[in-house]
Length: 263
Image 1 (cartoon, rainbow, N blue to C red):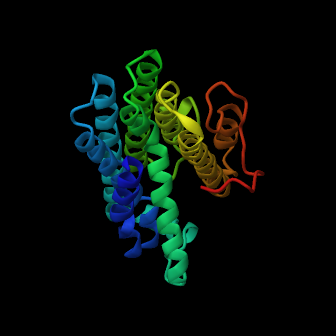
Image 2 (cartoon, rainbow, N blue to C red):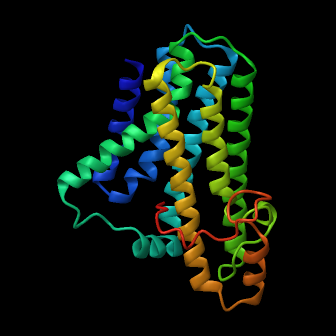
Image 3 (cartoon, one colour):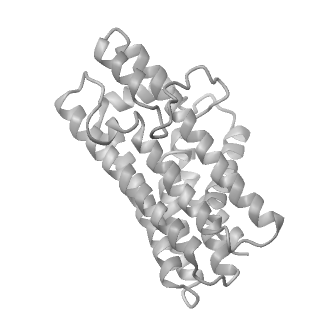
């Protein structure tokens, strides 16, 4: 029942994608996660532990920050609008049935991503080390993603024609995507000792695996765009050849050849 509620919350909020197709996966994503966090706080108010309460609140913070950031960027950044116009279909030619399927698939994904928190609450699992570690990883991911977005935003205001290679961008070339991966890895880890049965595990694994795949796809899309824009710059080539694309300290510098990645 709780999973159905989360799915319905995500359906209602992500329905803004019918106004603008990309909002299914941008604004609809962020605000759906925030809405799910609020729903968890309301549904399990009497059963919340400090850790599960923190995780539900972190979902709200994560969703509001991401949704708000994307909303501001979309309205203020002409370069972002131009980039998205070239890279993402506006949905004007997408059949309505396809939009329905995308809407439902997105809502299901958002419910699956957040399901480990639900399962810890609905299964009345006790607070353990795994739950605490998961919450910490989640918090670190949210902080990293926030810092990465703020760093790039400030840098681009001062250097609109240059690639960003300062701060956390010295660690990996896509630290915002790394923050996203850490956030959902933390959520997934938090449910390891709480989930019961094949269906709960399938939902949690599917949510985590899909978002990681999407983030690697986003890194691939960014790499292709940056190569197109900066490949004639020796500084960029040196930066790209020595800074991992997504995972720190792992010598994976390019994913452009992996056409099966979608993000």
